Length: 263
Ligand SMILES: [Zn+2]
Picture 1 (cartoon, rainbow, N blue to C red):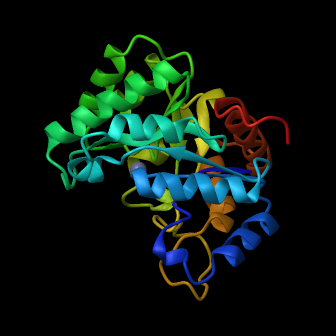
Picture 2: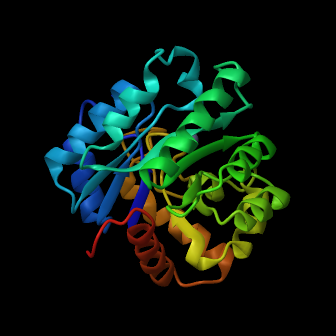
Picture 3: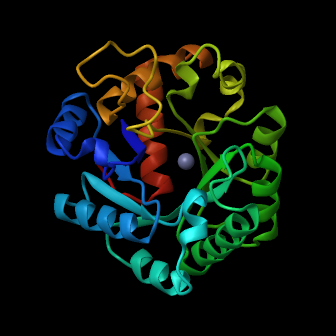
């Protein structure tokens, strides 16, 4: 299994980050892509991943739409420098979030367009966040001509129309424990069989979105990468597939998408 989205440097993991990783490896997770969400967090994620070695950890480098407002004037050159680091395998997390609008939409859009072009220029995949912004996200992606390195819409929560547009644009789809929530995840559960297996990736988005079907432990609502099997189990059930086969296929996909090299 490969978890393509873990906010591993989140303060919620400060007390026991090494134990979190140990549990992930013991649960059968073989590689984790650590999500970078602003310049400082992306630098930390890349340094952390580099310390642990490319076989186990890699990182994305980007500025999350929530943080668009705080981006410094010279964000693009600083981000480009980070993206050239050895452990960085994708540009992001970037995108648009019109659910919470922690940053004004025009700031989000400017940062998203800039990061889309940066990924194209560097030949890196793009790690995209879309929350209630599918039309605008798809519009920005459609305007960018060069997608050869790939785009993943992580934590997909859109409707059928959004899924079709993303697939038509050649995007890959990341599924989180959102799918494990019978109420919030109802639409995603229904759409799950329509995602082509060769475009499917799985992620926990930990410490967020703890899968509701995972057994209780001492960590309350905190999610962690060791719980990825619970996402895969639900997703496989929705698709009528064996969890083991889905785990193997999505791990192969992640290696291909992020160019991680053989296991
Ligand atoms: Zn996100």
